[in-house]
Length: 319
Image 1 (cartoon, one colour):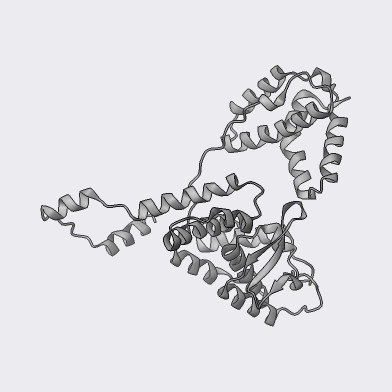
Image 2: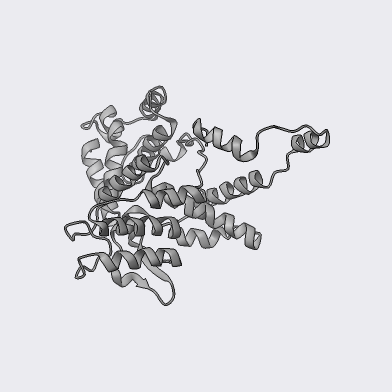
C-alpha cells in the first residue's frame, strides 16, 4: 500500500473515532511535510527508521521553531504508530522520542490590562461590541476553547446554578462555571442582539453562528488596539493559571483535578503545567529581597519612588 492510500485510511479511521474536521485538518497539515518528503506514492513497506531520522534532522536544522518542529514530529509519530499497528511497517515508531517543546512562561493579565482589554472593544453596530465582551469574559472566566464558544447554544445555560454546558473535543460535554460579571456581559449582549430565533448563542452580523475565524479576527484587532499580546488560547491559559493561584491562596492546594475537569483535559498531566505556573507566580510574588534588607539597614535609599520608576519603565516599553 502507498503512503497516499494509507493516509486516507488513517483519516477515515480518525473520522470514525469522532474527531472533528478541525482535528482532521490538523493531521493533514502537520503530516504533509513528512508525506511529501518520503513521497506520496512510496510503499509503506519501504519506510525505514533511517528515513524518519533524516526527515527529523532536516526539520531540526531548518528555520522552524523547536515548538513547530515538535508539532510536526509528534503528529508524524501518531501516523507512523497507526501504520505500525495496522500495516507492515519495518520499524517500531513507539520508540521515537519527539523533542519537547520549549517551556514558555504564561503571561498573566493584571487588573489594568483586563480593564484595558474591555475598554478597547469597539465594533459597529454596538451589539457586536456587547457580543465580543461577553465572549472574552466567558473565555477568561470559564476557560472555554474558541470552538466551544462557536457551538454554545442558549439552552446550554442554567442561570439558577450559574453553570453552562460546553461540547468539548471528541463531542464530550462538560459543565463549567458562570461568573456574575460574565452573566452581566451576557445579559447586555442578549438584550441588544437583534436576532432572537437562533438556537446558537453568539451570532455574526447576519444572524449566523459566529465562526472561529471571526473570533480570531476580532481578538487579533483587540491585540493591536490594546497593545496587549492576546489570543483565545491565552485567555484559556489565564483562566487555568488564575484558578490554581486562587485555590492555593485560599485553600493551600491547587485543586488541579477539578481544573482538569473544567478544562476538558483527557489527562491530568496536561493540567499540571498550570499548577507549576501558579506556584512559580506565587513564589515570585512572595519573595523576600535580601538586598532590600541590606540597603535599608545601612540607610541606603533610592531617590525615585516605586511609582516613578514603574512609570518610566512602562514608557520605555519594559512594563
